[in-house]
Each structure stands twice: as C-alpha cells, then as structure tokens.
Image 1 (tube, one colour):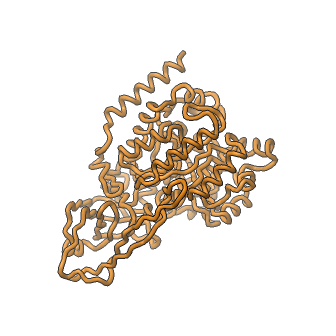
Image 2 (cartoon, rainbow, N blue to C red):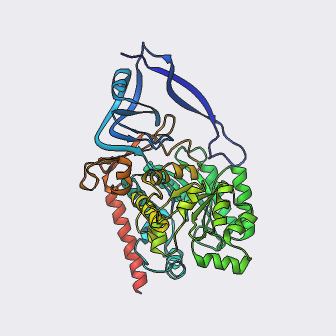
Image 3 (tube, one colour):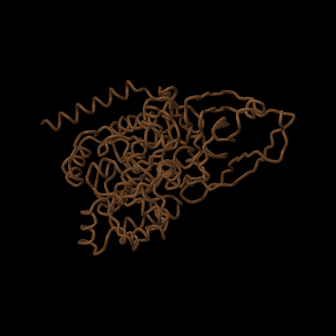
Length: 482
C-alpha cells in the first residue's frame, strides 16, 4: 500500500453573502495530497464518484479516466486514481458510473424561473409587443406568491433534470424563490429586482430596494444562496435608482444583473431620451465595473466590446431567447477574443421556451461559427466553459463551483454516454456540446447531496408540480379567451 500524503491548509475567504454592515470571515478547508504521511490510518470519505470520464473543466482542461472524485462534507476533497481511492480511504458510498461523464453542474446565468408557467403563452412576437401586450398584463393579473412558488418549482425541476445545479434568477417575490431553492437543494443567486413602476411585489424603486436588502440580510449565511441587485433594464430604471444600486453594491460586495443592449429599439430609445447609448449611460452612472452582469448585449459596437474588456464587465449570452425574439446576435467570439468573460443563460421559459443549458451550449457554439464564418470560433471546450466556470465567475462564485477541483463544492452531474446520439465517443467534451441531450443526465449532486438519482428527482414531487402548472394554464387560458 502506497502512503497517502495530505496537506491541510486553512484559508480565510470573504463570502459574497455578507451582512449589510460588516463582512463575515468564514474558514474554508482545502485539502490536497501533499507532505503529511497517513501510513497508519485510512481517511473516512462520504462519497466516491467513479465515472468512465471525468471532465474537470479545470485550467488544464483535464479529462481523466480511471479516476475517482472524493467528496466529504459536501466539498470535493481530491481526484485520485481508482486504486488509491480503494486502498487509502474508507468510503461510505461508492457510486460507479461506468457509462458516464462526470462533470461540473451547469450554471444558468440568467433566467426568470417562475415564467415557466408562461411557457408558450404568447409566442412569435417582437420583444416590446410581447412584453407590453401580453407578458406585463398577465403578470399584473396573476403573479403572486403562489404563482412564484409553483413556477419556480417547475423551473427547478426542469433544470435539475437537465443538469443545471445553479441558476441566476431575476423576477418578483424573490423571497419565495429563495424558499423553493432551500427546499429543493439546488444552488441559486437571487436577484433583488428593481423597477420604477408598481407591481404585486413593490410600489416603487425605494420599496423594491428595501425589500431586496431585507432578503439579502436574511440569506447572508446560506451556503447555497447568494444575492445580487437586479435592476430590470436601462429603460425601466431611472438614474437616481441606478446610482443608489451602485453604491449599495459596493458596500455589500455583490453583483449587479441587468438586461442591456437587448434590442436595436432599446439602443435608439436611449439615444433619443438620454443622448447616449445604454452602456455609455451606465458608465456615466458608475455601473460599468466588474460587478456588472450585462445580459443579452446583442447590439454592440467594436469600441463597446473593448470597453467591456477594459472594465471587466461580464456578458450573459442567451442565444435561444435572442433568436426567438429576433433581438439580434451577441458578438461572443469578438467578446471572448478581447478577454471578456461570457457566460450562458436560458432567459425565461416564456421566451425560450425551455431551460436546457445543453441546447444553449450547442446553439452558442454553432451560432458563433455561422455569424463569424469561422469553424474555429467557440470550440467545444470554450462552450463548456461558458456553461460552467464562466457562469460561476459572473456570479462571483468561481472559487466555489464551476470546475471539479479540490476545495470546491461538489456540484456535479453524471451524463450517460451510452445513447445513440452520443456514440461512439472520440472526445467526450465535443460530445457534451454537439451531441448530448438533457435527458441523458441521470444523476445530480449539489454540495454533495444527491438531488437526481437515476433520472428521478429526490426532493421534488413532479406529479404535484405538473398539477399546479395545469391549474395556472387553465386560469391564464380562460383570461385570454374572454
């Protein structure tokens, strides 16, 4: 038996969920195999995941075979060869995945989870007509706490079954979505929505911010929940509110999540009203910083791309939604060439119409090749990064999730490759992006807890979720028919 060498180091990390007035310093245990011999003992490990391929998405883009991911207390302890795992550890649960890729869970960097109940409600319309004549009226009539709970649960069920382990939400009643996240076991960043106009959630920007800050303080010690400010868009939030959001974001050390440059109409309206394009206006207000998650960004000049790179702005690309609403094409190959962090989101199911991150990966890669006329644009490895570590980076969680590395949370998914559409396997990364479908995800873990087992949800009741979805369908349909 070869000795196992272990080094244990204590790292002080500053979590993003600090309280309103002070930062909390919490120790994180990081374990790597070095220095201290454990010849005389065997370490106890909660979980060992033994997959045919381990796609780490680490900086070396390592794809491992004959290796095992070791998980203890929800975090990845190490990745070791199979013989070392068996000889040096006492494993409580050994899971064999001999037909599977084990990979980091997907990060959906932009969605409106409860809008899953509006899936197919108003299709094939331009963005502003879709919003003003259909979505906003429906929201004003139907959105309440029960709508949010039922819609969020439907979305979380869909995301877990498709391999998404973390999502970035922007919608009303964020407290309700947070409760759904707690119950389901998934990970999420909850956007503190801000608008000027009244809704069922708040009457004006002051009340939106007041309620959001209260929620932020309530969630600050939750392991699987973070918060960010979520001003809806430049055309729905005024200057004074945006300035206040920037000040608060700096004080609380959290991100700002916002639809920006989504359509040509938005850009023209900004020029007509403010005398400048939306991104320039946000820069003048102090929001163009590494905290900013700019969603959509389909209308960009070359100098704006350079500006995003210089300022460290994150871009959230939603290819399916942009295509369906005919909003335009985000120049992601140019953005990535300039060094901009580009992540992927699905947008809400009302404009997508699904929350399938495998489809977003594939579409992002293929669309970039078509727009740029370069087959080398956005290779499979880059698309996979956009759906994992880049999303984590945009959310400020790159030290916690997004890759399979020691010290990170065990947010992992298993994808069954023994399927007609993914055989034979020459390159598992290429297959994940260009061939795999979401229904090949068989198992999901978040913080080491299994949430999907052999395609069956562990924490959610699909029958009840579908029943509630049908109740809302009938209510919405009766209104439109009348």
